[in-house]
Image 1 (cartoon, rainbow, N blue to C red):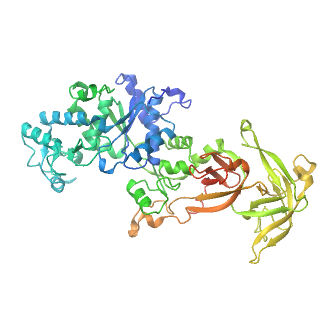
Image 2 (image 1 turned 45 degrees about the horizontal axis):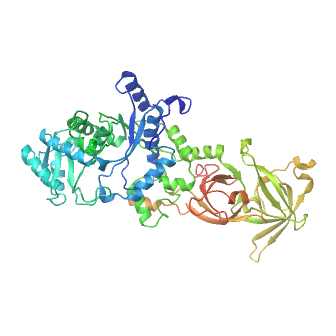
Image 3 (image 1 turned 180 degrees about the horizontal axis):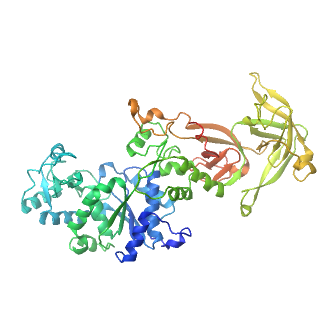
Length: 582
């Protein structure tokens, strides 16, 4: 797939000024680069989450802004943990965020090239086959304050190393019995440079290559050379890879693919498009929000233990989950812009994420009326068969959104919290003997309360001030409160899922006191209620978002919603209700 380059100035009317884009500008101005090529390289061992949204927007955004391209490359070098289900979800998420890749690649596409590059390193004396066990390798590695020790196998001859490596490739040895290691410096201050492993033996079937390979390249080796093979100019990584950059550069320089056409023959023979080069790795801070956990391991535990309803549970920080929650691609891109790109890791307040969604939906989501805790209101001074339709704007700030017809009838549903038999101080909604305006329909007075045997209020009997109807002389009569409603005759019963933050504390990853993040799960993070919506809400298409007036922003569920049985998920409240919780 290809993407249409977007010139930098065309993105938002003003060039972004973060340090990565400035490096790209400088590289273009100096002639170091003449075209910009990036990649987004997730491992298909789980679902992408909000943190990946920042990387996606940066990788694809930089390429677009400077007229270049971005590849989607699946880092499939660890087949024991990878699954085609994740591959499909990753592609879906990138497209949903509004991006398209120049080319879809896999690290496994390059296995032959990576193997030949490893042999080249052996011939150059830069790699050796080591017989130490994983435990012994850790022991020999040393500490941050003490140098490591050379492997007793470090000085094997080139011939012996090639022979053993080829036998590893042939599947002759059991798992973990040997590794191919770089020969760098066991006294290096950077632990990643102490003769790191380049290949390990794993007799595991691969989703793309089957059982063709009993050995698999390590991440640092595969990642750096995959970037080089594809001609990536700027390899953008999160900060934890900063200490890996010397090894990244070492692998690129020692393999020297740009000047080694013989290593690339497996690709050229297949007509594979590539332009080998020397990429530049740049690191940026991860995206972390409070009230969330981002660890794939911890998210998987929530799913496997049934603590959430799957990877796409709207409370999960996965892109599949927040999409089902009602987050929009434009809201996530707005959030990424607001957070910015920096070198400083920090735990951000989730109100930044929620605020971006509110601002996006306030501008774009049409309005509808819904009642989530219904109380019946009967207009006693109109005929039992009374019914009319009222015209309501779809969006109060956008006339081009047009209007919709809202049925109004003798019996209505209102929110139970909009009535108080004994009103608290300052209450401005409906009380016995009090007036309130029904949004767009007129003013009513509550004359009588009907209760059930338990004393619960089940019905309000009210008088409609006919002179206060739209267009009448009394339409502008002032009353203290206005409430919304849904006409009961045409109301559509709906399942309303009230989602909230998954955890009760800002830092659920903090395990002080022996507590687990699971101990902080919010029991009120998901409530399901039966409500009513106006007909124009029920006919929503899946994933269509609305502001339910005076309640919050809601989205028609991606999977369960139908016009006959509407299902709406709360995306976010109208205001930050957590700000006052302290």
